[in-house]
Length: 175
Ligand code: IMP
Ligand code: MG
Image 1 (cartoon, helix red, strand yellow):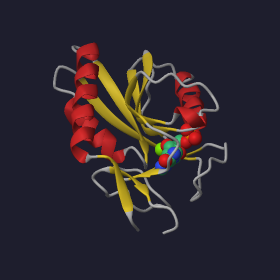
Image 2: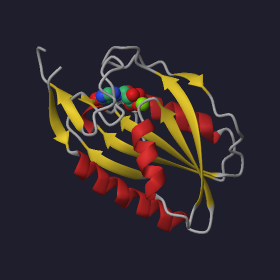
Image 3: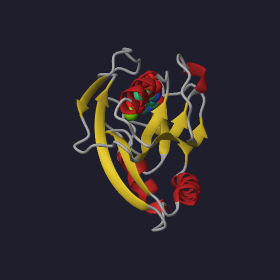
Image 4: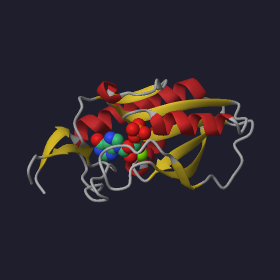
């Protein structure tokens, strides 16, 4: 499937390093739980975690949600398919997401995590598509703002494939 590069691996790496530095500076001397939202954020979260230096006592946890099926339009229904295995009560939590599109998934997850009593809750998203926003979501750390195109690679999929591309790309029309 032909894919056009939207954001190169080098540009992603530089931005992820900046986000990691920002988080490390803000949370130095404290412990933080990085909660990666599977599957889409697995690559981003792995790089982001390594961009946060040892000034932060970092833990990594995972959640999986489903809102899409294999279509490229959101169903509006968010389902937690795999939950945290540890409590986040009293902890500083940063939710790590690949992309905020309509915002429905993050609005739902942030509300859900807030009920569990974290000391603080922030959101770090690699990408945001403001043109498609249906519900406002406050993103504390954002990699890139993109146009209304369907992106793949660096963890993001099209029908479960292309997550392995080291860059962010757009699938060419009609292929
Ligand atoms: P939202 O609930 O509409 O904000 O959708 C968020 C989820 O949809 C993301 O976590 C992605 O898994 C998926 N998604 C949205 N836009 C794209 C895209 O352009 N490429 C791949 N997945 C996307
Ligand atoms: Mg996702």
